[in-house]
Length: 74
Image (cartoon, rainbow, N blue to C red; front, side, top):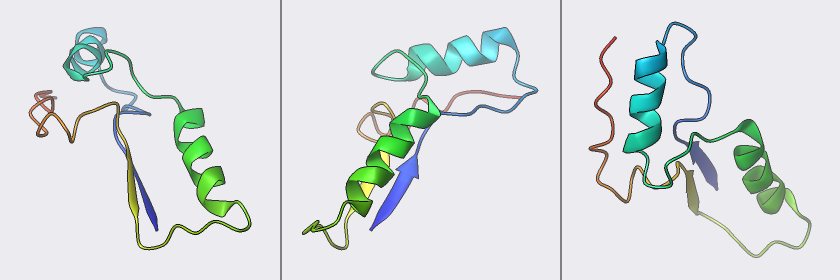
């Protein structure tokens, strides 16, 4: 199994405008928080899980949108 996080912890050098650009480009219209990823990992680590070979994308919808939300320039 794998967990593939999206926009959760942005680079420290991002400006307010860049952060807002990522937020509005994310279909759920919010940035992720580390707990979003942690909850997915805990689900997969739960004893008795019958999940195998799966990828869990924790990205607020970026991949479903086709990745076109990645329009930030530094």
